[in-house]
Length: 500
Image (cartoon, rainbow, N blue to C red; front, side, top):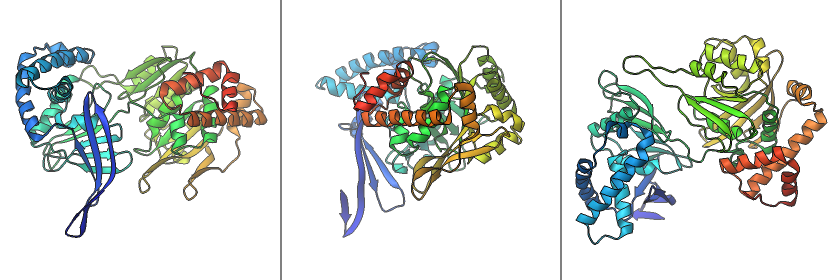
């Protein structure tokens, strides 16, 4: 829909949808206006400015009447109990002040009250939009920005009116996890109980005002069928990666910032067999694996204000090796000692999957074998493959750029590479080292490898066609394939759905 003013086009609606924010209906319109970026406009039906003013008055009364202990405030395990306390009291207050309200309206207003009392106020609604990757406050002088999965960076109709309010939100996030942000410590990295990552800075370190950057944790993470459907990876390459995982070969996922490394790592983790123990290690937990897996999720911890209590990636890596893991999944490798432990784990028979910053397969080898990581090149032989993720900012797409095997010399041999013009993965080299490993450890001939890849590619295409995309559903299909391959292959052949 386009609005016009004096014969000139003022705005064009390019997208519109609705979502539920914990009981509060939210409408979104994405508009193209006269400036250079889309506008993300959010509205809550039945919640006008006058109603918000009244509810903000009730917020003080609600906080006063609900008595909380310090444990209830800081312990995320008690969040549901705290929320119920506020819900009960909020419903009573609304019944007292608005006796004619319907129960449905009370629930909506209660949700708004709680989000503004316990949460991040005006930022709460966009935090529940699954189409957003980032929610950003740059200062009180400009609107909140969001990064939309389809439309990229957008201005919103949300404003944080005062710099003090931005600081209060940041301080509240910090208090819940034992961190401080103040004049002496004006930078903070933290995470919400939901897993969303938060970075905050204070003026004058950030010249234009206080900032908050929230990287949203995906509630519905990407799976291999998702990635195939959006043409991020081809079924054949995904099937070859699956074959590597089935035979416990270690892989490294590389790429630039925002290229989808962690999303791809999460997607391939759904291909783990159900009868194995998985240990994941991350700075902030982002991975979501099928619920039936034996999975231990571990996260690092920064030191407290006295400089004590730090748990590093290295600490967790060393500890994980004592937990008899069949698979180790590591968020990101940055330092030499971490990489040494990781490759030592591969040499001792553990299957390891990790991410690293590098733009292509050869650069990945260079990054790993030079300072600061500086792993001796011969050690790379224990690594079987490198998957490179790429984000094309101009086109707004993410693709698997390369899949490479690692040769005995430690060099990368690129087997598949993305062709930009045709937007397809093309085979560029013949398999050598990878086929040797599959022959040695799985007893597979080249003909059997090709047949297995073809079979798995067929299963993945069937998943896409049948709409099997949820983490648990994909994991169940993969588990059934491992336990009873003929049963899944029959469904694939007959093009029938799987009973989940």
